[in-house]
Length: 548
Image 1 (cartoon, rainbow, N blue to C red):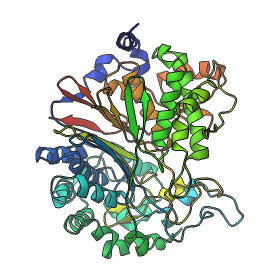
Image 2 (tube, rainbow, N blue to C red):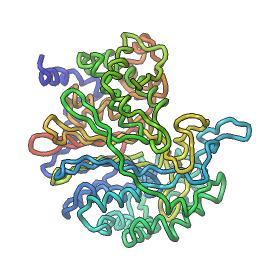
Image 3 (cartoon, rainbow, N blue to C red):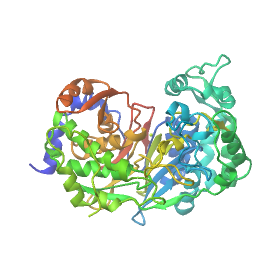
Image 4 (tube, one colour):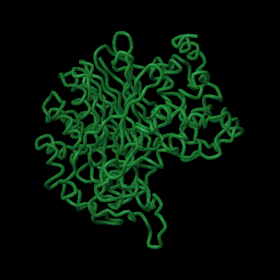
């Protein structure tokens, strides 16, 4: 059977696996001829489209989208966090990747999250307050990318979010739900006044949230560039907030002033008839996604129907093997040697794939290669593309609000117990799972722009959507709608619903440790179709895809 014929045969078998009728997904996908934005909130998508309509490119639009996400989706990303960005320069035919990951303060030490007796803190103990706050990197990175690739004036890119901050936006059910669930946020006076009523309860759905402090911050950055954030009064307020209160940290104004964004080499690899490129270290996401796909390509995944036990088993095994390597080898390449080429080498993936059999491995161990968050996808009228994943780590980060934005808790992405490749050190960037990805066809043209939120589950979510489109012939929305599978270590976690009910016991019979989970995914993707583009957004969040 031909490869394309295989696509269409498999596509007819996915109704149960998708969990919805084919039209349900197709009717929600959005098509456009010239440009498109997919992101986690309609306000952010509108901001990006406004910039594209003005003649801006994908980089310009990404900045506008990020500023609006920091307003309307404050639990996920913002000025107080970090990001990784992939940019395809369509004119120059060059792919570039940029690292705006948070870094540890100069005073940080490996034992930061150990209790006096030597036991590691729990996340609940470590996250709230300044102890968990790393030096924010997203804004400095966006400024660097704009200076190199942007078209419109910097100040113009802030206008949509600034206007929305002053006029207000409606409290959504999702934001209100997070406000109800997350502990500690109402202890911050600024956050309490903004999001909670006089009784300390989250404001009602539909309430207009006006964030004037955020508007003033945006106005300062629009006029003064990123230096208005990393130096001066805003930087002083960030450092003061981190170093005071319960569970204080040690971030200083000098840490903020010294932060630098870094251009990194993207990681790329073949899959079937396409080339897939993503973010390299300190993110583990790109390497892990490429390893999962490389292992699937070698293990007979192309013969597994979309709704089969075999497909679920093979995907689980490939993910486990990739995560074993992730735990052993991945970290900040400025501090440790990361064997990127070895981990993606054909002979190494051949060897690792031979470990995958009809039953679950008793324990997935790392090989020897030596011989969580929001996301956006954009394509512009010139064919340029951005995939960016942006985060403040946990919902509402460290629960500290400064001048209308929340500070990250990214230092909890370091290992709490020192000694490994991902132990905390001064100036080091913690390992990430973010995997902004761009797929190129055989002719070198952009075929798919994709990424996801979701912490360590990002890797599996992105890989799942890619096999949905590339192996099973699904459209972008149907691929996003596929049930999610992730896990930690050897545990296989399946999204609650029909897929879990159908496959949990058969997978256990093959030796897998399986449990259900409510997945926090936030996939956004755009794919090339005849005559233009088609976008999809994760309905597990509030995202949309729109274009013209």
